[in-house]
Length: 556
Image (cartoon, rainbow, N blue to C red; front, side, top):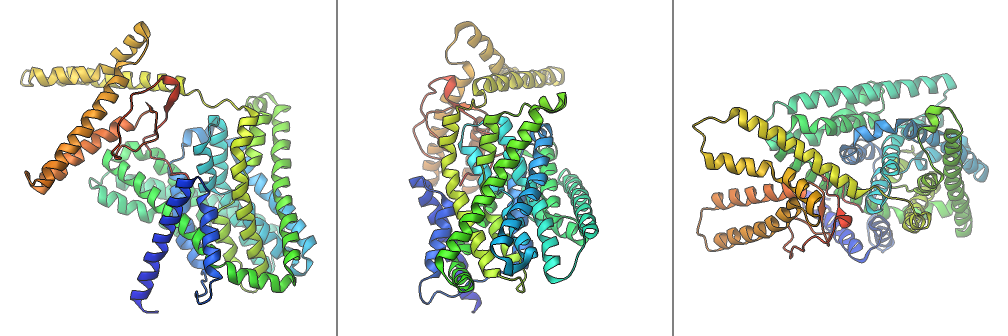
């Protein structure tokens, strides 16, 4: 295949992923499921070439950016507050699931051996970070539940891949419990150590960079740097990527410029979107070869259906058993354990968030060619992912039935106002101490007026009620920004100013609009700051939506 043909296939591949995902969002379907289904349908069309995924490409090319993109926007403080629950789920639950599902798979398919069955179980044991984050982002869940789900899905991949490497070693050679324990300890220590070292190094370099382009370029190679460095010392590359992403995300406001932070947030959303959706489509294109090989090994469709159904039941049941047992232990344990405040309703949601995704689909191709029943195990992993994604559709109904109380958004908005008022007061204090007689009084008055807007807004709201000054300012300022952008665009079309001047003016308008949208706002519609829509007036504090400045991952 010549280079031109390869480029044409890549362009068509990305275009198809974008079109399918856009269509799925528009009609309210699950984009990952639709991508897999479309890819599978295409794979059965006569004349479509066989698509093969190289395991090394999956491990080194796909997994690092996916995990980094998922971990970068996670809040470290929240994860630390729920670290006990997250560690139990990301380590204990994965090990429990791997042994349970591995044993069930071995009983159903004794010909493949326990090592291959355990390798398959390790692949399907972890939940998917991107899929879980998408679910958590769409649903109104308490903060503690969202933190637990996201933290678990980020860290459990490291445990699963360590178990997978152990199983692969057992398939191609021999191993022992002592070697397994040593490998696990080295993987954890090496992964955490390298992740922190890479995070500190990149953070130090970033503090000296002044160009967003250089900053973004460094960010794009960071997950690969962390993964390769950890792998070189036999540490967990997955853990190194996640730790470095968490560290850099936490340090970002202290070492990056505002422009660099905005650019990086958008870039990682784009990278995560392209890689994740491309893998779903790519895996679907492998369906024809996987199905043919699996049916040949089982000698029948119904046998394959039966095996997959039992394995999926064991997978879902093992998670439910572990989660509810963990909650029972915490609720009846020591005072410290009871203070974690784990509730049965929360346990039901965590248990039901049983979604697998890209990492499972990618990791199953890491099984070596000599693995017994390799095509059958790939088909089973394929079915597990699709069924688990479909099960995620039932989560909203479960949450409504349980009547979970979401985060108090009104209180959070009030806390945001207080924090911003205190921050502006600090800025005003600095202004008064630095201002000199040479500074124009009109400029100083304008700066003072802007700095006191939020504090005045709080006083007005407490006295009179209704719409605060701040919300009124945002509503009216957004209307002004829309008119300003329209005027600049008209001036551009009429060529009244040089293009460089127009671009600078648009950039300044965009930055101010991003500042307005970076905080919680009351909105009637879910619009983007750059969409040309009529801005509706806010309808009440109870309807505000949180728009966070880290531009968290776009839900699928």
